[in-house]
Each structure stands twice: as structure tokens, then as C-alpha cells.
Image (cartoon, rainbow, N blue to C red; front, side, top):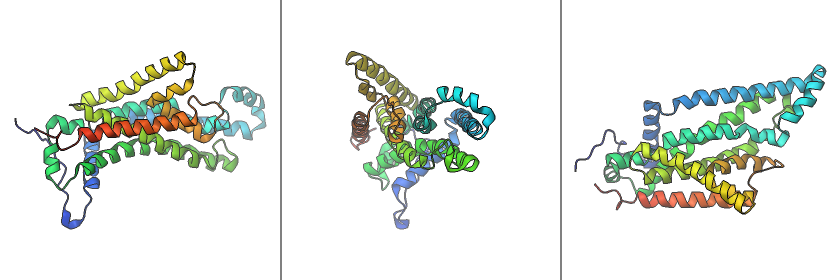
Length: 287
């Protein structure tokens, strides 16, 4: 059968000591930017970020102006408590759209190469299967992590500039939220790579990613009702990523406790990376 290869990563130059992982990761990022994948979600994220910034400014006005005392008492019943507010910078709405974007972008990271049968040609370069998988993992991890950073630093900088250390956002908030963003990105990258490796086309990969986090949410909800234990919701990658900011910020009410979340994170990472590793072996890269 013919090999259809619309574009191949450049062959890493061994004499220049360029890492194949970085070369292929740069190629995938340039392809994503060139194809403008997921650009619509940028407007959604910008809208969410502006709304969060407006909430921070409103809280600053209520704390600094005595005329808003009555409004402050009413708003304190509606707005989250301090720890919950820090965790809400990475809230469920933003994470849901982030999962959709990662499914759209990451669903084709490996399945695209499977669809066009170009993995044998990539392995013909000075590229090991581990280098190939690491380059895909770097892209799948880096995209959600970079998207979460503005939701952490922009409200934090705004709060520090407007109200100082006593503002709505803790001075130490990034120390709590950056590890949460790292753990969220690990879960997203693992699920994305596993689903993309199981698919034969980028569209099928996107469907698998979206289907997985929705189906596991349904299963986790059923098990939590049957056993009367909300820890089963950790099966869902969506609720797992929603729980880590609350856990690390010390919120009083978390949907998933620490240890179930930690176990579920390790299990998701090990399972999906194992599947991706098996599906990207040279024996699988046949024409």
C-alpha cells in the first residue's frame, strides 16, 4: 500500500546534537499553530479570565469602601470562601472547555501519524520509540499547563497590584495552584496520549478523548451513589482535575479526598502511558 505523508518532522541532525524530542515537539506545535486548532476556545478562555478579574475587583471594592458593607454581607454568602476562591481560579467551567480543547488538539498527536502511516518513516530517522512518545507527551503536557498559567498569574498580579497582600487572592496562591496545574496537565496528557494512540484518525482521537472523560464521569457518579462514597468520582478525569486545586488550596469541602485523588492520578498516568507505549512500538508501526 502507498504511504501518504503530507508532512514529516525534520530529521534531527546528529552532528548538531539536537534532541529528537525537541525537534518533533517543535514540529507538532508549529503544525497546531499553522492549522489554527482550537482557536475558538481562546475567546472562551479570555471571557472566563475577564469575568474572574471583574470578581476580584468587586471584592476589592467591597473590602475597601465602607459604603458597600451591606453588599459585602450579602456577597459573602454567595462568593466562595477564601480557600475555595483561590481554587476557583481553576474552576470546573474552565477545565471543561480545556478538556474539549485538549481533545481537539491532542486527539491527533499520535492518530495523525497512524492515519497517514508515517511512523515507520519517523523511526527510520535517528528517533527511538521512547523519543517519539516523549515528544508527544511534552506537547500534550505543555499545552494545558501553559493555558492554566494565565488563570493563576493574571488574577494574582491584579490582586497584588490593586489591593496588595491583603487582596482577595493570596500572595502564596501560585505556590498552591501551580502544582495543581502540573497534576492536571499530567492527567490530561496521559488520557490524551492513550486515546490518540488507540484511534486511527485525528477525529476518532478527539471523539475518544471527549468520550472517555464523559463516560468515566458517568461511571464514577453511579459508583459514588451505589457505595455512598464520593471518592469514586476520582475515576472521572474531569472531576479529578477539578479536585486538585481544592485539595492543594486546603478547601474545606472537596469532592474527592487527597488519597483517592493521588491514587487515581497515578493509575490514569500509568494506564494510558502504558497503552500509548504499547501502541507506538515499532512492531505496531507497520504499513
